[in-house]
Length: 58
Image 1 (tube, rainbow, N blue to C red):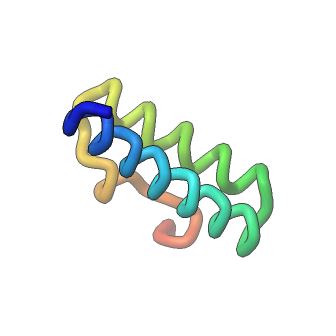
Image 2: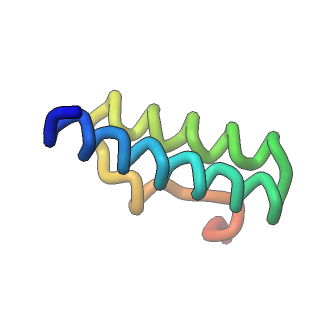
């Protein structure tokens, strides 16, 4: 594997582990929703950490 492919694989492994952790803590719906919100922020060019979530909403 090239260095670039190895780096990408490491990111996928981390993303998979995070997804598994979210599923274990809050279920599949939460994990999918969180990943969709993150993808939307990326597509819109917005920082993901500024996205309002139910835990951060008033």
